[in-house]
Length: 295
Image 1 (tube, rainbow, N blue to C red):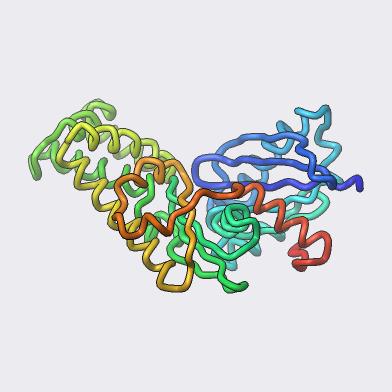
Image 2 (image 1 turned 60 degrees about the vertical axis):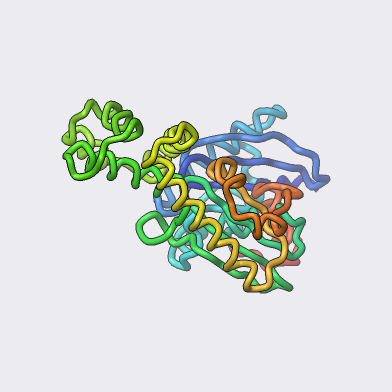
């Protein structure tokens, strides 16, 4: 009964943690930086520990409680077996660690462990459904080859289009001028920035694109329309596989939902809980012998 359970929701922009007692009382919540597994296990655990310490401090606890803290990791990037193995085998200070994709834990939390699906549209994107124990994946293969309708890809498209326009290859718009001004109208500044940029850096431009789309900027409207189309395709793919209820999650989804096709809106529903709830459910089941501990 001394055990504590932490649920981690980690993505390309931030890491959130909720800690509960064995009696399901909330100990606290913490927040830290990006924790996509592709950033490397050392960096991921650094951010997770920061968030856990913040959560523990809210009830007068501290790092010494790591020894009784069982952590459920729901991380972007864990869809690859190599990434999951790397994260779970990394030396840590916790009592135990279980891991899965952030989409899986989000789906567990959204539907209370019952059948259903989710579409995460944030810095990255991923769709996932659970139907009678079968896990159905759509997307989530990373910034370079997947992440359709994500904030990172929307930002990248806007930046590429803005540079193209500045060079006279396409019409300039208010959006392209605003993005070029951000980079001091200097392509060399953009190149230096891009050399160090991570997905969340590109995703930081997504709100600007939506804002200009709302103002009628033609480029912004086209970019947002492409994201809407891709999000709709991901929802349809889940529906075709037998998923009946789908929850939209992530910051980008808040700007896209009203724009989605009317024929898919009846399948959308509000979540019962969040990804941290799902991660806690996962690690509880593992520790209690109902899921098979992963580490």
